Length: 255
Image (cartoon, rainbow, N blue to C red; front, side, top):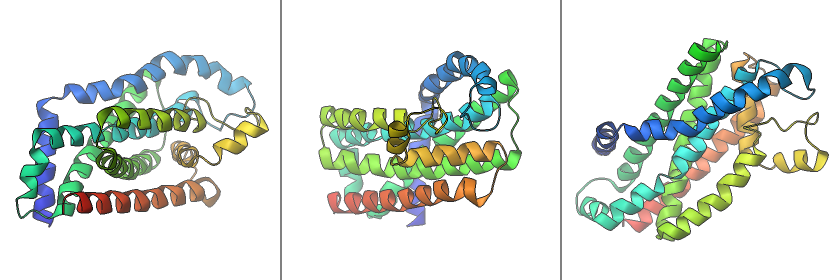
């Protein structure tokens, strides 16, 4: 199985390297928020109650890493549908390759691309805005980004195969991603000091809220149980559920 995973991973990675523009395109939105939105919240951090501890860049950068995984991984299902339409998946079905390896290779290739984009984002923030964060915290946040990308890629493939229609798939993603983004506190932290009680209560039901908060804790070097426990448990649970769903759907559709 591991040989099959490697072969599929190498194919997907080669396709990405042949067209590196997609890496830059995926970074465009986070960079726009970083350069155009970051300077707006920088004076607010020191004067407005309710912001988490740390500088504006330590608050915004880990949240944008989560956004990279959220949007970059959720749309990979379009690539799978394109492979189905072009007959690539059909040709792979007749090979002796393990069915789960077909999924795992694709998932790992996309997840590592997301981590690479996250590294570039951190490097740019350090170089341009003098971001200060502990190296261990940055590495931990990147590991969280890897798990989140694995979970969302798996879910995206599963949803794409279940819907099997590009327009319906796009509509489903838009219906889910925009509320997830706005309620996660990626752009502005949703805390009791900033948000009304009803909005704060709704945001707690969003799993990405807890992941963003854990990511921000890593960038300020807070590895305590209070800061990391909920986000870590939510992330691990989301990974298990999404990988299980993706494997089950992929195995059934390619039987």
